[in-house]
Image 1: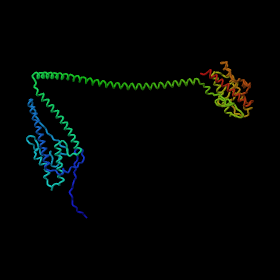
Image 2: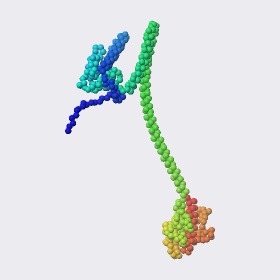
Image 3: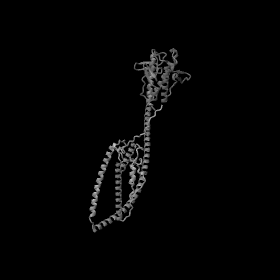
Image 4: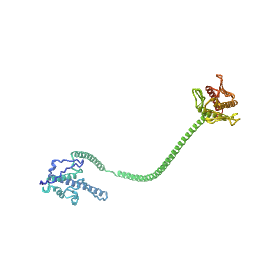
Length: 474
């Protein structure tokens, strides 16, 4: 079902904005009722002001022509008049000055007043059938603002605040113009007073003479100025050349400092390496001196004691009923003793008589030089001591004999050297403190005495080692 309604004409609300701050405006109600007489009054004022301006311009042109004719110079005065409209006055409905045909008068080239008047007042002659009353009021308001904008340098409409600001600025400008006008009037009076005083011929001659002198001075100054310009050009060339040389010198200086820094850096590196090498050499010398002071025999063969046992390199030499030391450890200790005594003899270049000690670890032995087929073992596996230890006893007696021979060799070199315990060829060691003799044999001995004899033998061997390291420390 269709509803038939009356179609209303399309209406558009148009609002004006301030031409300075662009804020929307609400026009006063009086602008909605603009009369035709108001427009005629504004148009006549605009035409009177423009005609007075044209007359003023013509008066100025006449004065210039008269002054030029008095000086004897012919000049053409062409005045170009140009009106710059605001951005919104290019085309507004029927009121567009730029589109009006330029029909000019014969004198000043202004537009006919009848044409402008009829164009601006055409809005009052339009009938209500063509446009509504609101559209006619809008056109009249636009035309009114165009006329106000054309009569001044300020675009209209303006809001109240902008209008107050413009009035304040125009008041300031008016005060400045009044001050300038007063200054010009005073200057004009002064000129008139100077012109009123009649100059004498003598004063004229003096002035002409001064004028010639000034001309001569001017010519001299011009010549001097030319010379100064030439000097300035020469100095500019020298300055340019000096700047070029300075730039080259700066480049060379920078290159020099770069090379200098590189050499300095290399020098610091070499110095650091030199100091490092010096430290290494000093450490090596100290280490070498410490090695020279260190005896190889003392480091290789450490003779000490652990309770009732004498030890060499940690191996116990001896055996007790309550401490049954393993025979392998005893054999290893005898191997170290054989190696030490052979090394000491080789150090002194001494050769044993009747015996030759062969260090062979846990299985060291002694060869008889008279009977090379017979060997005396410095090791044993234990067992029944009266039967299995006979050769072992002979080897220990032979070792003690070799130690006594080595002691005799030391006595030949140093008569003041004495061992703490006396040794005999029968395998006995004498302790002076307790006046007791201990046998180095195990077959006809108790384990306590045998262990003490071995301990005293190790003590004598340590003293011999100390003497060799002291006298022959090469």
